Image (cartoon, rainbow, N blue to C red; front, side, top):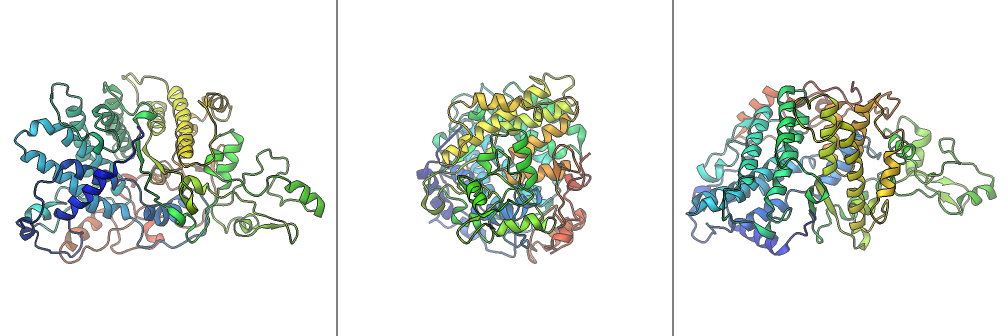
Length: 566
């Protein structure tokens, strides 16, 4: 559902939160919140609608997360972009701090306020939504951090407890699955009459309970793919539960979790901060080979357009050997993800091909900056962030059916049917994102003809030979604007795969971190932090890529190395 955020609710929520008790950072903060709780000048009964909007507004990735974590790090590791390598700085992992400072505190406070109401039974569905939003953000936080405070995370606000234990990742997922199941049950219960609603304060679904049920079921699939190697039996069970649920998971673009705030410009003019980002060779070559219409959404054309051929002929020049002059899509060229591997190509990532003193051509296609930053340099597009998509849902279902996990349950279609739905939805959704950004689109109108032609390509359709790999690769390509999900995908599956004849991971000689880090919280909670790190096999205070590449969160312990999928 495309929902324009209600700025009135957001601004009031910010003001309300400023008057509420702030969650202390998980550091050495020891402020006496007991005294603050008794301050009569503070708001003690906030409007829960404002709190919900504030938390929801803090969920989408921020500009800092995009720049420091995605564009500089994870999108390079997953070979979605190629760019100059930079060290991992303390600016990564901002999602972790945002979860505890801007998302979770308000959601817990909403639950407390509802429980205090005389007519609390009329707010149970509103309460249920807080758990779904909580789980969505919690998954993203634990993905890169493993064990985290949760069961005791907010006791500082209510019990003056500043040393919360770190819940193991497996326990976190079990807790969150319980939350999701309970939320689904409450939201699906038609006997709960006369329920209050967030209305437009719910910036995702405007209080549509069934859409939240669909989101909760897709989040169960997100958890299932993460649990597959650590607890395969539970992963299969979750898949069956989702398929047997009467409402089911996200079932179309209108049910996607979308965030569109016309005032938001998350990346801004920093889209080129420290480095221009370019397309990678394998992705461009594969998309050209398979007739993928998303290529013109994901990437900008290089300079080989217009009368460039006449200029080359005039000066007797030929293009570098890595470019086929007869390529009908010559305007799209990728570079090596690791610049040290193919220096003859990598040189054109930062230097033009010089034909004469008057004619210079940049040969490698940059990523589409207007797609990522629709207000770049005064442009007027909007950033539509699709946080959980129908395509993602379809590819998970296709993957699980292909693996044989659908036995004894109505999967509502074959692996091929779900795969095709995922392909079509990915293209439609990406086209909508591009249109909202006032960027290059893949089609006008319905897109039915473009979708049909693409699905009929022999290198796209399932053929009974390498079907799982084809499902994997399209899942990976659909995550172009969800860098965290792309990273989790590559980490859990080992795809794209080294030396694959279909779509290969290119040579990459840098160590690829498999986790980030949580800073030393200070004396107040250092023991719990150290205990959690020791239990996970983590090196305390390690921030270097080499160490981080050798240490894994719980569900990643038995996953293949990057590029070594089977």
